[in-house]
Image (tube, rainbow, N blue to C red; front, top):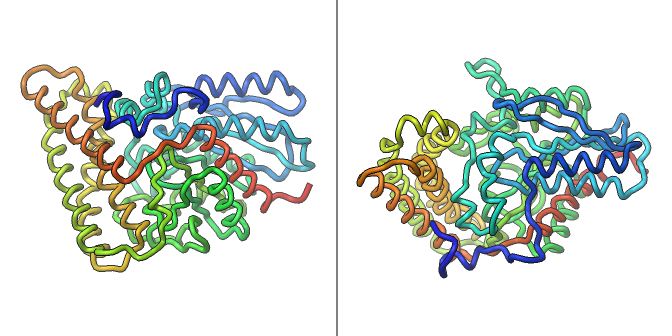
Length: 430
């Protein structure tokens, strides 16, 4: 993939006036500066270490029995959470202390994963460069998702840090600061929070961001209002992905009566996710998505044996992420063909399928290219050429859906407003 040419210009971030995302080191440095400037209200402490030994850092503003916990960087390919975490603390410090209320910001939950994406942050924020540095871990290596208590896996160190913070702080509100690469903004809640949907929708409109009214991440969930979804009871989710909200740090806060809001905002907006009208010719549209996803994934799976053993050792998380994504695609395609193609769907839902059909091969191809980067010989050259071709075709498909860059400040401003909106509904007046 390249950063030049007509295919990438449409998803370039403007070079001036839109800001950028901080690295983990920059976020920690910003937190320490805030603590030095506000020693009476603000403190920074290390609360644990990642699997690779990187620090997990908590920034606390004020103290009180009513606490808000914001979690930045839960997914390493979503850097808006780090920026929003710092901005949230800055905003709180601009206001007078609220009696009995403490704010706590975990700057980055997955610093190891963030390190594998960090190359993108040091250059133009184009979609092509984003995927050249792309990494998103397999589900069982995402710290917010907890293993089944009766299963063979144990919680990761990062997961234990977060559940330990929840045990310590007992937050009335936990906000998980997420982002989507392509699509719209939406909120996922562990329980209904009356009043949030209207404020969330107004914030989205203020930023010129589409509201995702039929989110692929919440298929089958109750939606009390457009763009707002309530996580289902255990065992009720019908989707071929293996995540289970009841086994997550989101639900963990509920043991203390807390509510979790997962707040999503896009880097590249696609306006059609906000269209709740019935989609025309659903069977043909979904069938085309299934063909595209299945065909490209089959091609990429054929390249996997060319990854050399030393790449799997040096970049084990990348390899496991590729294997996970390849494995999950077949049940996704089967679900589309069995259930989606014969059901009345909204334009938003069909658009979600179109995004997924382009995005998943793009992610796999991008991570495969990183794993194949140092391989020599004609077979490796051919494999890289094919992976680049699939990545380029997938990017072009996303461009055709109308993807447009959302400035970093706009993303951060919306996410910060959403946190305050949820907090206003749960914290005591003050």
